[in-house]
Length: 83
View 1 (cartoon, rainbow, N blue to C red):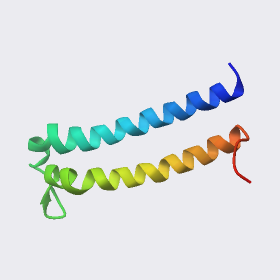
View 2 (tube, rainbow, N blue to C red):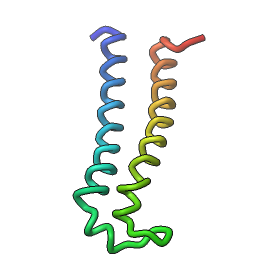
View 3 (cartoon, helix red, strand yellow):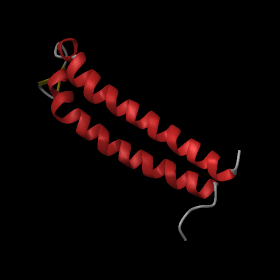
């Protein structure tokens, strides 16, 4: 496997993992498990409601920063980073 193929394979692996996390948080916690999570309070709100309203958005922003960090490290590892 060439160096660039390996680079893109790792990139797609990162994207797949991060999108899976976002899906679990937004769809799983915000829709499928909302009734179970509503039995728990978080900052005065039902946890299921919190995930549906803000948790998935906050998670998405955090995942953006994680992706940037991962890609910067990957770019340096494969010497495709910007100077």
